[in-house]
Length: 294
Ligand SMILES: [Zn+2]
Image (tube, rainbow, N blue to C red; front, side, top):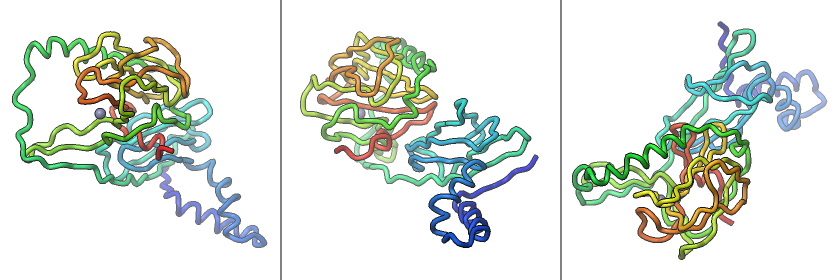
């Protein structure tokens, strides 16, 4: 089997140089901007996104691709060659995209994943005391079963391929990835982005198209009125602590559609929207999907 390694920048330069020789009347800079990119695109991955921990990429596979993997894990590819992949909060410094071609050869591309400076706080307190009570677990088990069942649903949606919008605008009151270390013992990190508007009842909207896979009518012990939306391709959003949900399981929702109201149901010290995003098992930073709040 033939393995071709193509670091993207080197290839672009080589392709640019080759074309410059063939067409000496055009400057190399012009070629870089247009012809080089077009000429090399078909034989390699074309990707855009956020190559960092908690980030994501979207792109096109090389022409003639039969299947694609990220670090050996199979990735779904649409009929027209589009794909999505993402990098967990604790992802390593590099990842490898590999496409198997119809003739059996491989095209692989190494991705550098930038490390993030997570907000880590050391506190001189013992981590909470002991295992949860049996009474708590009796309530918790069926909730976890519902969450796991919802995440196992693979809805048909193109939300993963859209430019996302903020579900609500307000003060960022908690960042994804933040973590406390209790006398040397790490607590679990904050799995989402908290947005507060200073009151309960503020409406929030779907950041992208999707299908509702969980809408807790009775508040869950920790998440309260929990809403999970599947955006297709293994990508989903969860919204916690709502005071009200206005959609139900199976509903198709569109980007910008009103889906619920902010609250403090479940375990919350004040009204806010906790928004978390997962791709398969990877936990992602919502900030990297929407950018700065305008
Ligand atoms: Zn939160």
